[in-house]
Amino acid sequence: MKFKGYRRHDGRFGIRNKVLILPSVSCSAEASRLISQQVPGTITITNQYGCGQIGEDVNQTVRTLSGFAANPNIYGTIVVSLGCEVVQPDILTNKIQEMTNKPLELIVIQEGGGIVNSIAKGVSLARKMVQEMSLLEREDVDISELIVALECGGSDPTSGIAANPSVGLASDLIVAAGGTSIISETTEFIGAEHIFARRASNW
Image 1 (cartoon, one colour):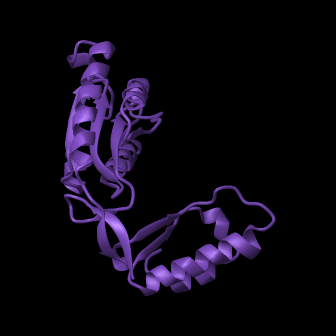
Image 2: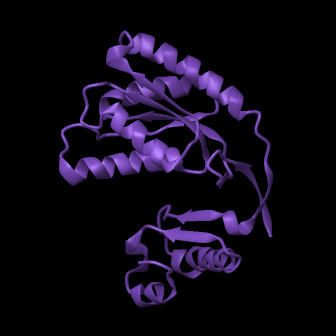
C-alpha cells in the first residue's frame, strides 16, 4: 500500500508541505503571525511560553517547539526570537538541528532593528523558503513510513459507537502495514487502559 508524500531532507515523508514560522517566546508570537499572514504556504503557532520558566519546564518547551520544526509536514522553519527570553535562540535552533537537518533560518528582533524590520526580513525569508518548497513533488511512499497522530476533535454521543471504532480500525490497518499510530489524549481511553497496554509497542 502506498501514499503520496513529500520527501524531507532528514529522510522522512510528510503529507502536507508547509514552512513553519516559529516564535520562540510569547513576545515574538505576534510578529510570527504577521509574517505568516503575508506569505501563503506558511503556518505559525501561538506560543505562550519561552520566558519566566526554569529547569525542566524550559527543557520541555524547547523539546515541544523543536518537535514542531521536526514534524514531517514541515519543509523548513524560520525561528522568530525576541532575544532576551529564557528559551534563547541558539538553544532552540541547536535543538532543532539535533532533531532534523531541514532548512532553518533565525530572526532576532532585538538584533534586527526592531519589530517592523524583523517582520520585513521574515517575510522575505519565508517567501524564498516557500519558493524552494514549491519545487518539491509528491512521490509514492510505502505506508510503513506513515505516522498518524490521533486527537479528539470533540466527543459527541456517537463517538463511542462510530468515530472511535472507525479510527481504531484504520489504526490497526496502518500498524499492520508497518506504519505508526499515536494516541495522545489519555482521557479517551479511561477504562480501556489494559487493552491499550496489551497492544501498545511502548507506554
